[in-house]
Each structure stands twice: as C-alpha cells, then as structure tokens.
Image (cartoon, rainbow, N blue to C red; front, side, top):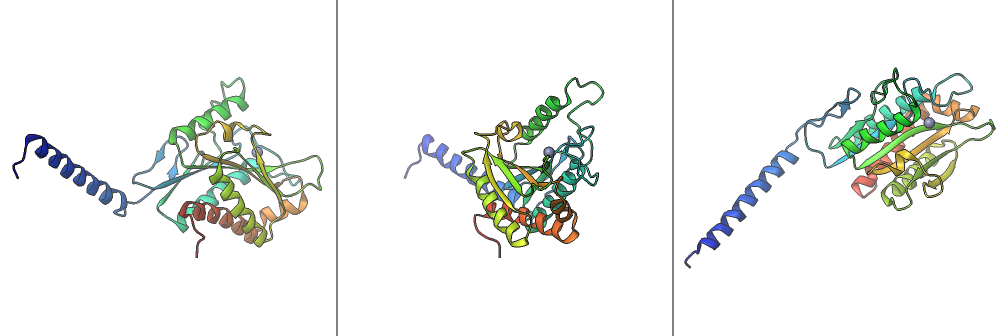
Length: 249
Ligand SMILES: [Zn+2]
C-alpha cells in the first residue's frame, strides 16, 4: 500500500505516543524513590507517586490548640500523631507520597510578628499550602475539648459528597473499635458544621478529632505507648485500604 503523507504522519504520531508512554511507564514505575518530608513550606519530593496523602497537624506556633487537664498542648499531640500516621502509611505502601503541612512547631505560612488575626491567617495560609500541593487526600489531626470532663470519644468532619473520606472513616472507626480506643461519636457533615480546612480544600478532606483532652480516659489512652501505635496504624490502614480499594492482608 502506498503511504500518503497523511498516513505517514499518523504512523509517526502513533510511534511517538508509544515511546512517550514507554518513557512515562519507566519513569513512573521504575522504582524511583519517593521522599515525603518537608521543611515547613518546601516539600522535597522527587519521584512519581500514584497517590498523595497530606497530613495536617492542627494548630502550632503561638496557637497551642486545646490544653489538656494534665497540661499537654493539642498542637504537640497533633504533630506527634500526624508524623506517626504518615510514617505508617509510608511503611505500608512506599509508593504513596505522604506530605505534611508542618513537621515542627512552626506554622511557616503565618508571620507571627505581623499578623493581625492569627486564626484567619493560619487557616487561609494552611489551606493554601494544601491546595498548592493538591494532594488526593487531606487528613487534619485534632483533639477535642469540652466543658464537661465526662465527654469522650472521637469524631470526624467531611464534606457531604466526599465518598472517599467517608470510606476512610468507616474503616478507621471499625479498626479503632477493634483496638479498643474510646468511642465512635460518628461522622459529621460540614453541611451542618462548616469547616474551613474541609470545605475550602480541593482534596478528599477529613478533620479528625481524636478524643477529648478534657477527659481522663481519653488522655490516658492517647498517651499510652501501645494504644498510640494502634491508633496511628489503624488510621494509616484505613487510608491505604481505601487507596488500594481492598482490605490489606
Ligand atoms: Zn484543634
């Protein structure tokens, strides 16, 4: 068959596309290391990852968050848990890229010297960081507090249409129940309780309140070394299983 210019061109395009595709496969799945740490604002991340999870440790800097009856700050606990959950996800599936909004006390997106309204600047800066990196999943880690010291349990907030985060919560609540951690207070919709970090981020976003710092039983459990690992592993598993679309062995 005689090739017309048109046919030659189409064949050329087909081959070029094929070669580009091969290149992407080699680059993408060739075992390039995925590094998942940041130094506050700059994420050092070389390599391709099919899925990204960003973990946001609540509060930080001049904002301690809730203060537990034993003097612990929510911002310190949220950071410890955020890093631990991220480490478990990386351990379970190194191809998932884990990013953090902060890995230390500092909230790099607010200038504490000049801010006129820390809370607003923090939320706007924090959500901007998230949307800049555009992770597939966002987990905001918080701890609750109440005037009533008998209030205990964990709960989470997601957008009403965010099926992926609802799936994560359903898995993690089963796992936390198996681990014997506190009580499931349920999944709340931001349609009823609007939340900046959940409503104004473009990821599958969940804000998790992991127990009450005003409750003795919850604070004891949160600080128990074995329970701490179980809680963080359970949450990590819930993400990895949701991402894989099947329970882990
Ligand atoms: Zn909080």
